[in-house]
Length: 113
Image (cartoon, rainbow, N blue to C red; front, side, top):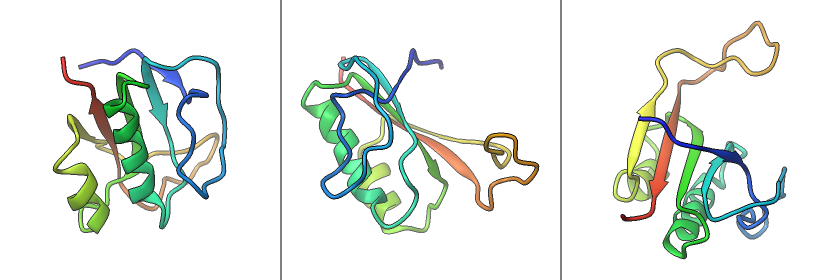
């Protein structure tokens, strides 16, 4: 399954208290989000799901660490995600020669219809 994407939009602001990393004009379509990894993951997931529910995005795809043992995975991903895709190998970011120290997954929230 493929999704048409645009990088972060100006309509999807980071959760309250989070620092905005990047934005581009647009909104209402498909959005890719690579949020900061850490204690605010649940808030980012709630925000993404809310943007879809409010119609400000039709699709949000989030790149996250595959931490299936966390509360946010069980509370925000399992019950609400349209799809979860586990990435087979560990990612390398930029020109790094070292893989990420954790597995990754894509969490997809999609509007009904």
